[in-house]
Image 1 (cartoon, rainbow, N blue to C red):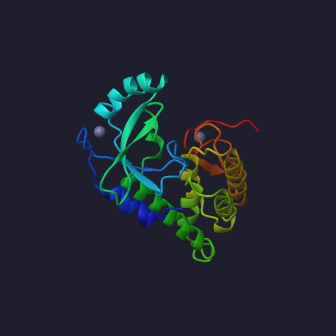
Image 2 (cartoon, rainbow, N blue to C red):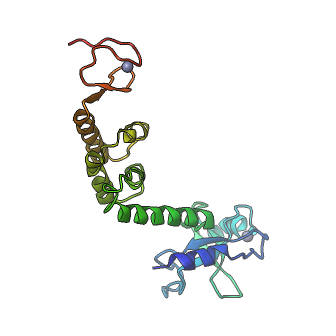
Image 3 (cartoon, rainbow, N blue to C red):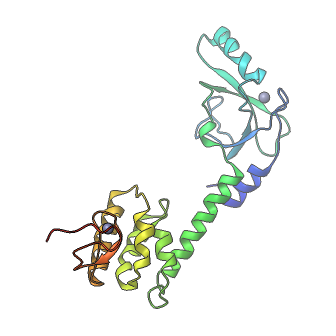
Length: 220
Ligand SMILES: [Zn+2]
Ligand SMILES: [Zn+2]
């Protein structure tokens, strides 16, 4: 596995296509090598993904004439090599899914570090009355489900109703998380003798007959 530091180092490197002068994209090497079957010998490669590059635009005819099938070439360079080579591709989409972008990489790493830190803080958040790590995990769609469920389970002990708004404003992808959140909030509100107005969703007293926010009346 490629480490984060290696990824960052490679993706920050600047290499240019000798055929079209375009900056090469840093990509993960595919798991197989179509050519000699020896593998790539590298975890990343720099590849020209410019569709106007003559290597690519002329490659279709070359492959059609030579092999009689549909495909083209891309220019690529392996790390620490001076001279690049050509790789056959079946479409313009090839390799575009494995581009390593430094910006994206940094954002991913930051999110991961935040998740790790928040998970650590779960141990002490209740005694410290610290809702922050709990909320950040619950609202992080990329965080692991176990950590998020654990965070949800702490909402009742934290007993901080300011968690309701940000959670209500969030769209949960996983129904498992959404269900856990909904039933936990229902319990939390009940413990505080509150409920959510079915009309405007503001938090009101459990026994209220009229919503103090939207003035709607409730039938008994
Ligand atoms: Zn090029
Ligand atoms: Zn209301």
